[in-house]
Every structure is written in structure tokens, then in C-alpha cells.
Image (cartoon, rainbow, N blue to C red; front, side):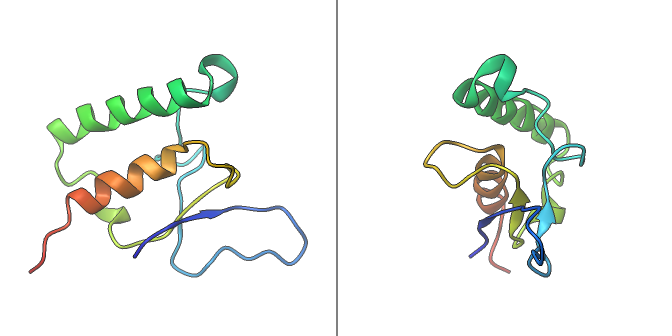
Length: 96
């Protein structure tokens, strides 16, 4: 089951193999900043934007399906845009 992993600048840290970085400035980065909107509103707006984009391109999240997603957000119980991507990518998975 794919999960969110936290990126780190600590010495010796290595991103888990196969994990996709979804932080800024990647194509998956959240343009709605926590500083401007607060965490909940930034994530809400991001989900709205991704759902809108999925309407135009249902394959948008295919590169993320089945992958761990890496972001800088802490594991503090607060929402993260990577959680949105994990949720939406798993909703689009099918059993072949």
C-alpha cells in the first residue's frame, strides 16, 4: 500500500527507492502555500485543482499509482497535498 514519506536534509538520509517526490518545484507541488492560505485551505484548494485537472486528463495520476510519495510536510496529523494525491491515485486504480 503506497504511503507518504517525509523528505529530509539530514546527513545520510536517502529517499526510499521508487518514491516519487511531490514537493515543490516538481509538477506535483502544491502552488497554494501554507503561509498564504493555512494548511487546511491550501490542501483543500489543491484537491479541488487536481480533481478539475483529472476531468480533462483521467490519466494524470498514472505515474503516481502504486508509488510512495515524498514531501517535506511533517507527520503531525495535519493534512498534506501528498495525502490528496495518494487518495486520488488509489481511487483510480483498477484490478486487471
